Image (cartoon, rainbow, N blue to C red):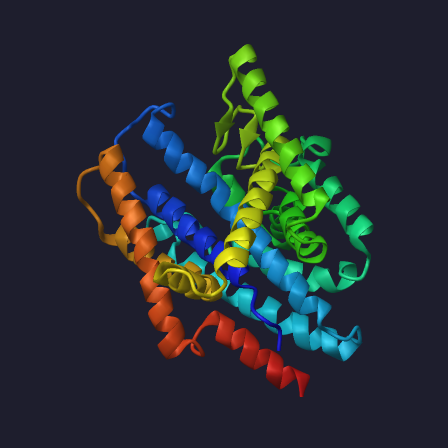
Length: 357
């Protein structure tokens, strides 16, 4: 049994709450507002860091779990196949819950973040034993992929094109290059999580990476002001873009992820498990992050399918998104204590134990 890493569960809890916030913000009809408005910038900043935190924290857990496996064919099958199967299944569930035909954002076959996790589970056995330097080099290569293959990552694609795939070849193109969370470059965050698990948060490399990232961030801001171009946009023409993830965005977000990881590690080191109750609930949200991820789309799917009211003002929208995000913390804590076995996490554990026998 792998020992739980407390601050990792806090990090996953923070990440999934931010994921709920950004998805809720995207689902709410909001009055037209300038992207330069402080509240709009705050919402975008939370949204921009949600997925990097979520994927890196999950990559940390995937690495720890994979490193505890004997490197035999049967062991790897028993570890990877249940994860990939359950994650692929629940990606389809999410897509159906939030389908474009009912006001949502996905097609049935759209590869998403759960598909990224599923594919990562199949790839990790091939790279987990390659050593820190080899995996770090692979991560850096993935980070610069958006620059190396700028003509193939879908910079000019519409959202409708990004979530659609006409046949298996185009589906793999979305999974690898130009979907919502393509392996190139998003697998780099999975590798980052594994590297943090191995080298530790207190290493000089981790601290130096944060320092480099902060300097790089400052340079991008100065360049943005000097050249009069947008610093960050969800998509479009800017230095930092999310769809598709630009190299600059990846470097900046990775440095922030490492900083958050270091800070949470220090909090755990100071207070251990004797912190305020909110941290206990946040831990449960982290442990049930897949359940929260799937569950919040039930609410959002019902909302976009039936809400016919007026557009929200920006402040009202932000309050609604924050309340909806925060309410999942006690829900996750309660569900974890009462029904934890009936969850994607429980399904993976049960499937793995059966296949390993």
